[in-house]
Amino acid sequence: MLETNNQNIYFPAFVNPGVGNEETVNGNHLAKPKSDLLQPLRDWLDSLDIQNRKLARFIAQTIPAQCPFERDIVLFNRKIAHIPPLCKLNPLYDQFVGLRFRALCYLADVCGEDIRSYC
Image (cartoon, rainbow, N blue to C red; front, side):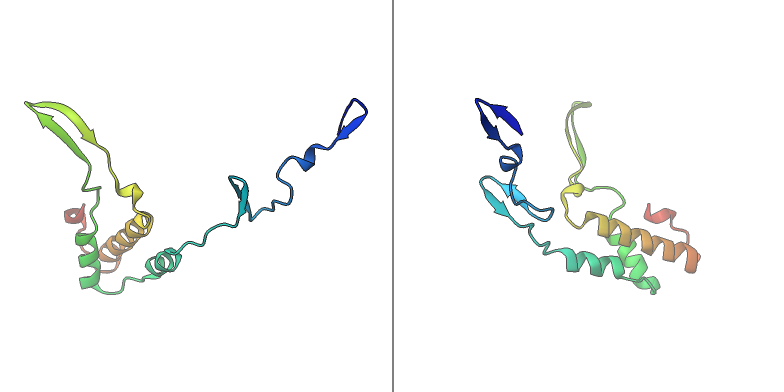
């Protein structure tokens, strides 16, 4: 509370009245958090259990170990530009990396296969 010219000013009235933990301020409007439409797909990818050698090999070969979009642009043996890895922009990036890791672990631990060729 601040007292000026015999008028009481209550600051909490000016700081987002009625906004709870689950609500956010979007401009002048109060907005509820948006639901994540990809969450069921994320949960499904995280719950996949690798129990098949062919499937594990397919996943390890299909999902790259490094971002395939990262490039250096070289002209006359001089690097003139660099395209950064864009895989982090993929909303399912973490799930695919985890799936590839589980497939490689299955091949190495259960099947006893050498996984150096997949790296």
